[in-house]
Amino acid sequence: MTDQKVLEIFHAKSIISTKEVQKINESEKSKPFSLHYELRILLYLGIFLLSSGLGIVIYQNLDSIGHTAIVIFISFLVVSCFAFSSWKKQNFTWDAVEQVNPFADFTLLLGCLSFLTLEGYLQYQYSLFGEKYGLITFIPAIVFFFSAYFFDHRGVLSMAITAFASWIGVSISPLAVFSKNDFTAPYFIFTSIALGLLYMAIGLLSEFRKLKQHFAFSYLLLGSNLALIAGVAGVFSEHHKYLYTLIVLAISVGLFFYAKIKQSYVFLLTGIVFAYIAITEAIFDIFPYNSMRAWFAAYYFVATGIGVIFLLFNLKKILKKS
Image (cartoon, rainbow, N blue to C red):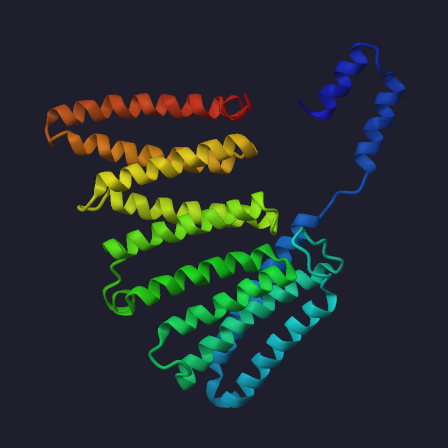
């Protein structure tokens, strides 16, 4: 129900007069419009474009600029960003920190992205880490985790979670990553599920022990998606597919109850979507390829389509606490 509709109802019931309705409408039309989120999006976009542009400029002007000058410039940018963020940061606490300076968040993000550029350039030009590919992702993961907690930055935390996941994948089998690109191999699936469950456990621990409680959402969202995507990849594989189906269903049920507790549409829909995929694959795996399967598929998808519509109309009731 819109504000205008509420005013009309109040006016019809003589709760407020016509003059008061006019004053309220004039006040609504003249009050300032917040550009907070629009400006934040533009700042994030600007940082991304600046970081990308820096990489392009370096690539196109290697010979004219000089390698030493490039390293010094990027290093100066990284140190400056972290120094500014340190200067403006509040005292460390395990609770959420209110940032006094709005630019400190963006400066820290720019510093982390520039650190990646610096590390990548040193590896490309000087082979700083040699064939120890794991260090390329492990070092940023450590730096980003420390920065996320020290500066209380959820964006950097997401980068840390991603970098650590990359390090796990590279450390298991570097040759498979860079030559075979076989991400459906059993060791990748098992490791991804285990890592996703670890992230979810850290998120729950953070929330219930109140250790950076606001970080729990990032851990749970990224961790659950990692575990569920890996589980679905296992469901469509040829080995242990029913075990993976049970794992996906178990995680989905856990997300359902967590969504009920936290009143979260995101985790509810995540659990339902992945559970639906796993159950559908398991059901159709039972049927042989014949006309009976085609007949069943037609009715199955019609019925589940109706179920999806029913679900969308009853999300609030599903999440309602008993």
